[in-house]
Amino acid sequence: EIETVLDTQMNAIQKNIMKLSADKSVKTALIKSDSENITAANLMLYDFTNSQQLKTIFVLLDTDGNICCTNLFENNKQVFLQSAMIVNVIDKLEANTNAVYNCVSRLNYDNGQTGDLLFAKAVTLEETVIGYLFVDMCDDSLSNYIRNYPLDKVIITDHFDNIIFTTLRPLSDSIGNCSAGKFRMERTNKNMVTLDGSLYYAGFSKLNYNAIQLHTLTSMEPQRQMILFGTFFLVIISFMLVLAVCLLSDMAVKRNLRSVEQLVEAVSQISEGNIG
Image: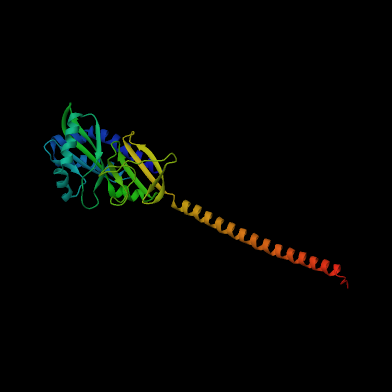
């Protein structure tokens, strides 16, 4: 199921970023910055991203703001380096060097490298920060994967309701309490919601150690249309049966009236002595 794959992918990134940030090759690449060590670290990071079911972007950054290793295209490197969001993430990593930090990715890269969910971890040597490792889940890869499932709408949010990924049309789709960049779904007891006049069944799952929320909407319109068609068909059949009963009853009454009239006429003829 979609939630199992996404949960497995996110957990794998979180576990591996811990492992990779502690790897000797990564630390050596940050300290020495020579081509041999950078190549070794680059190959290891490429092996990790290539082994994932969903495509990811990685960046290994030193404390001077230099990119040591990455699979970003050249024009996207500047987007990364000039991002205020990355500066904020680095501040978070400095405050807690042992934790993996994740957040909604606001990096609008070109050439299909736009991210959805960013994971980051400080790289330390003897409790001193020597760099930072970033892994970003790609929007195109996630979108292509989700298309394989028979779901009409998919929304992924963090635990603050910030939208990580969505297939909703931002200008026309609205469910529950939504604001710019946020999403919260109001459900009925039967997990049914109405969107743009259509009825949907709403699914909900928690991913990545309950830090991420997956909302799925499956259209109930085909079922509702079948019910409406069935109801309409039954009404028509019922109407036709009632009409048939009325017609048959009328015919039966008329036939009985004719019989009574004939009987009355016969009695009248007898009383007048017209027996013949």
